Length: 161
Image (cartoon, rainbow, N blue to C red):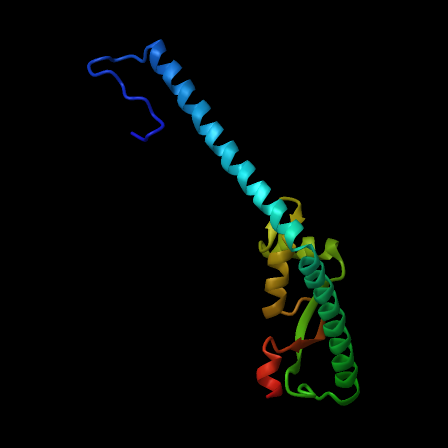
């Protein structure tokens, strides 16, 4: 029995109206407590955001600058990779090549799924499962490509030291 549950009268097999009324009071009190805490938290958040508005805006701006700089770095690294095939152009940056599979013809894929009894959802193909199969078994209706992606070290300070 929790603090929010009224105690049953000993020997009483049914719940009387007084138990229901007590439960209503308990729920009302629990809701008042929750509302008071939620209101307090909302006020503290508002105060925090007001008191730290300049810093919060600066963090947002800094984040946008980091995103733009990382995007430019990735673009430069990928361009360098396309010209030289050098996977590690500089400390802190590495090019990784990922397999990219594309189903060219969903109708052929469905026919294959029915015939092989794999990756089949009634009258459709489970594309996620199909692509997993295609990674280990070459399928004629799937295009197999490689996509290089630039990875930037999360700890550039360590790399630059």
